[in-house]
Length: 241
Image 1 (cartoon, one colour):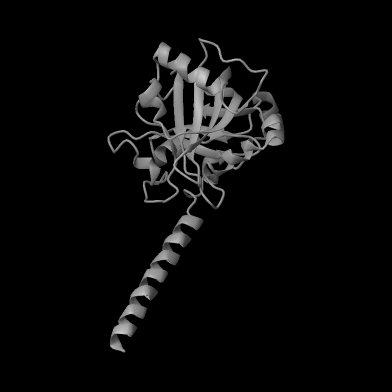
Image 2: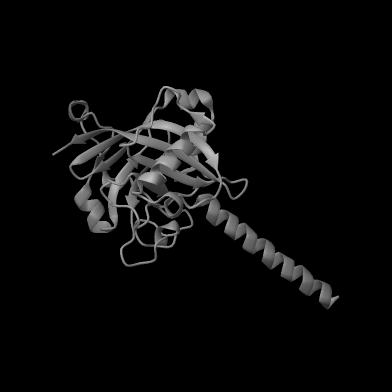
């Protein structure tokens, strides 16, 4: 009888552990980011033609690894972008802006990419969270009507706003994009651009030219090891004060 009690206790502990892990995964969202945003007046927003105003001084005093802000209209993707300095490359995979462990992590780039988005290929990584946070809303673009209606995303930096035309969404294999094509290799860029053009969901009227720069938002596909990718081409750079 004691043996069966021990077995029952063992499985109870396992069940509690699984529930705790599931709760951690389900509720983790990277932390509150609203305190770093400034709500502009309607006139100021219209003048600047921007949807997001960031308190850069406050954000970067909290964590100097935060160097940009990503906003994808029509989704909940509205987060700072980080890049680790002297900590491991993928530190922000499971750490938030406050440098605390977080299953959801942060939106981040690797050190292969310049922080001014001047590379031919830039990749931003984020988790596909079941609670809808981080890059979960990338999957919305698999629906043709949503893809048609939402054609751009924005990257904000101190003094600049970058507007990107969304050219494609697709599910790809789990290749390391930067390792395969490199950030600034012309031949690699051409192969990568051609691969995007052959993807399943591409905006037919959009063209990817040799002198374009591409930002790819990359997250996992919850069903397997593949990646959900949303690709944008730089369309406009706006200078702000």
